[in-house]
Each structure stands twice: as structure tokens, then as C-alpha cells.
Image (cartoon, rainbow, N blue to C red):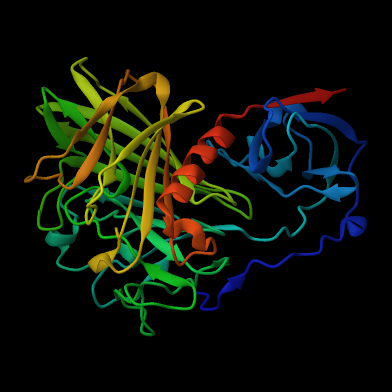
Length: 425
């Protein structure tokens, strides 16, 4: 496993040394909004630029003869990429005339996203890197008697902030504060012997775990409200059997511009019903946030989807602000361990499905949270964002509550802005 920090420095791209595979195509990327967009993510379906799906090589985009950072993603796992994922800037109402040229290999763009996942099959075995996992209901932390996973589960990050998911049955979302724009070491969460070790609650040059989760489901976790009762997807660390029969996890993509993770929860038992849940987590550069998308099968019609904003250590309440296509639930206080540092956290939920929020019960399987109530339909995806701005991050202004609120609402506007992609023959 790699132990060095990967600095996010500019990488020169030797485009001239890459052999062209065929003639150039012209693509128009248009910003339909009147705001400046920074590190705007744009996806281009393969079918739009490769009708047969058989063209060899990498689809390199250039603008004014400069390569645009991008990568290809295989989202369905069939061994063939499905989309070109692009990250670029736009001026207000800008229309970019972009050139596409198929090249033999992808340039080495600056690495600005990453996923870390390691596991061990027994307490006396070292942690090994992995790309996927299957967990049965009786294979949770308390039943196993040891922590199987490095950092309790996968960690994903960009150049601004990091997050982790408790794959050991708890299914909560945690925050790694990052002080500098680096990809954190691969050995976070293990010691020199390859053993799982909680070594990330102490400060390093890059930062540390800063967010207490407890019996909440963290920042961006989710649950169902069924007959006015909050039902957690998963369990507490003290429980020996999961309420999910089988959990599958996979790293879908890990690249310089986008990292994607997926989870499937088979037969989640809640209020006597069994639900099938699919979750996809995505992160790209430039934002102090990640995107989560969830769909549920087996709904009976009496359920409300709940998106969580852990409020441990919050003494100042929550603000609710509409911005663009989103409703922003924002809190700002010394939300970190022992109230040591100022942290702003927020969730951005789709305005069309939002139905207010509730507070989690004081006791039980899910506590210490504001829970956004969302209309949910069978197999219909709900996408939302979770945001974390730490006062020790690269943006020191996050110590100011108004500044953080403005950051969140501006991010919501950025995410609402639509980019039109037109491929010319």
C-alpha cells in the first residue's frame, strides 16, 4: 500500500506524443446560466460520441488547444466505458467550442479524487486493498469480534475534503477534514504491521477525522419514516445481527476527476417489510461535498425517505434556505470532537421532493440528527449532496457562519446550472 502523500500539482500533458486514432469531432458545451461555474462536472454519454460503441482509444477533449481534464467511467461493470466525465470552468452564458480526438491512451491528468478501501479476513491477518465486498447479516463488527475494515469502511475524497462510510453494519457517513490539497496516504487506518488501527483521530499534516457520529447516521446517511417511526438502514456498533440480509459494496470508478462507489442492500427488514436499496456515491474536484443517489424497491406507499444531518455538538440550530433546484439545511458551530474546531455541515436536497424536516428521537437506533423528509417512489432515484467546511481547511473563511451559508447556497446554484452538450458531425 502506498504511504506517501500524493500532491495535487499541475501535471504536464504530452499531447503531441499521443497518436491520433481518427479525425476530430466538434462538441459544443454551453452554460445556460448567468453565473460563473468552477469545476463544473459534465457527463457525455458514449453513445453521443461513439455511435457503435466500438471506437478504440481515449476520447480526448481540448479547448483552445489545451486538454480538458476528463476520464471514462464504466458504470454498469460490463468492461466497456459508458460515459466521458469532464470537469471544467465556464464563464456566465459561455459556449465552448471543444475538439474531440481519439488518442491511444489517456493523458496523466492531475489526480484530484481517490477511494481507499482495505479489509482483512481474520484478526491476525494484515489488511489488503480491495475493490468490492459482500457482508451477510451475521458478519458485523460485534459478531466478528474485530474490525475487518480499514477506516471502518471505504473512504472517498477530492482535493478539498474526505468522507467515509461505516461498512461494518452501521452505514453512517463520516468526515475527514483536509488542511492541504493532497490525496491522503493509503495507510490511513492501519499500522506498520498491516493491522486495523484508529490512528486518524490525531492531527497530521493533511488533517484528520473531525466529525463525531455516535448513534446518528452522520452527514448524508439515510433512513425511512414508516408509520411515524424512524427506521435505520443498519444497526449500532453494539448489535450482533444486521437488519440487512446481505450488503454488497463495489468501487465502480476511481480516477483523477471522479470516484464512484456503489452499495446494494438486499432484504432490509423494516417494520416487517423487506426493501431492496441501491446507493451510488460520487465525488469530483472543487467542492467541499459529495453526491449521493438512492433508489428503493419494495415500498408500500406509507414511507417517507429521510436524509440525515447529524447535529451532535450543535448548539445553534439549523437554517433552511432555498437555492436553485435545492433546499439547503445548514448548520454551523463547533461540530467537531469535543467542540474543538468550527465546522459547517449541510445537506442539499431536491426542492420538488422536500416536505420539511424532523428531529431524530432522543433514544433508539438513530439519534442526534435533523432528518429531511422526502417524497419517495418505488425505484425512483433521489439525488442529494452532503457538504462539510472546516475552519482549518484551505478555505479559512469557513469559521464564519454567513460565509459558509453563502458557500452552500452558491454551490446549490452551481449544481442547478445546466450544461448543454451538442455533438456536431
